[in-house]
Length: 180
Length: 100
Image (cartoon, rainbow over all chains, first blue to last red; front, top):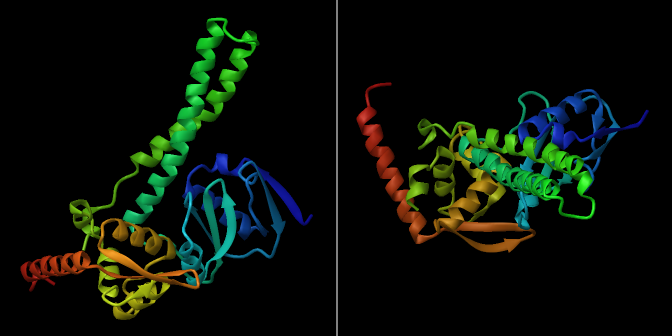
């Protein structure tokens, strides 16, 4: 087998650090994504490779400017692709695991960027569920009898995203002793 | 501005020191590792995020772009902020001298 498919990996590992850890475990077992596209959050193809220590970095960046890729590439990172506004980088290493976010304020800023993305998507899905419940119970709409299923699907997507958002925002802020 | 002063990290301070001369992102990483003898290692994600933040605060300015690399240098406001932070660190050092 030279290729396998991982389903919903970005949803089952919804924070940058969890997704990084999962990708690194796959690489250690000899499975790596060669490229990512818009569908990879749902269906990610992993290619068989030599098991290796690979550091992955997941960086939520909506519209990075032209210097973004140059900065990472100059520092030795290889661009894997974009996963729904998550920029994914990899780097093979020996010895100490390399870091792209080397201080707590920027790690915190990364969590906040991720929280914005999950927060907006989660809130919209929860609002969609509530709207469907209200319309369904009032009997408004052409397929009024389908509302529990539709509301349930919206809630299934929205509630975990809201939970992830809250978890990201509640992480401890940087310690003041890190200030210069 | 006030917020950035309060949260100025060791990394940010080193970036300000490095940007007394015009440099691009990776150039800053190398220069900081060099003048701190490897004590302060800055990652690519951290430098990109920090440069955006310093730019928004008006402490650094983009001077040019060459082969996708943006070059930056301290603004007058950045020079004043760096001097202020250095005086603050010197005061702290004076209070703590003799402890270690």
